[in-house]
Length: 230
Image 1 (cartoon, rainbow, N blue to C red):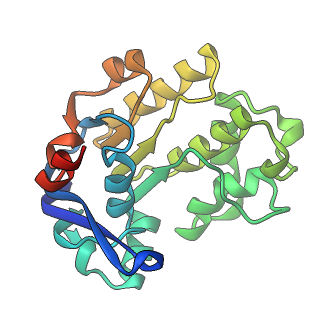
Image 2: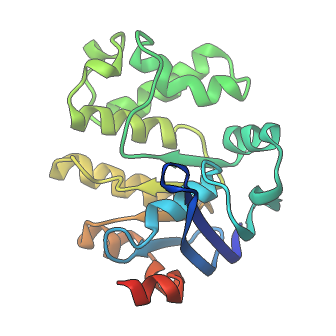
């Protein structure tokens, strides 16, 4: 479902005379349906960079990233949009929504984009918000007014409301108490059971041990020149 082959990435510092810094080379990874793979490595090793390349926010310098058969490195913008709508979900650490949009609508939006009737989409959104212990009295409010933990749970609800075949999870249990952490780990296990291919960053070692089938240390993909500089 998710295939990465010989992937490389470099950053060009345009305010530093165009200096190019290679940060990744030869990256390879395969994630099967029903499998959860954790990206590990020290801070700055490239975990988030790899996730952003899979999501299509960062351009690759070379190699291939295939999700559901689509090579993201060669895809047109409209193909990336369709992939994110139908196939690839992403739970980030930060909530990014249009101000003043009610929380229930924020969570229902992925289903509305797929053409589900509003009543059905909102009902499914409500189920997830309830499961994640967001009080119903808050659903009509914008989540931009919520605490960090509440915003994280809205992000999670939005990411799991549609049964995406592939999921990217960036610290999904961060900022959560024990009760909601258990709920999120249950959602991940349910997604695996229905066949989702998942890549995640988990600094929570116990969570990683519970839901991840294996780990990939991204420092293996650090260019030799960068390792020498370190």
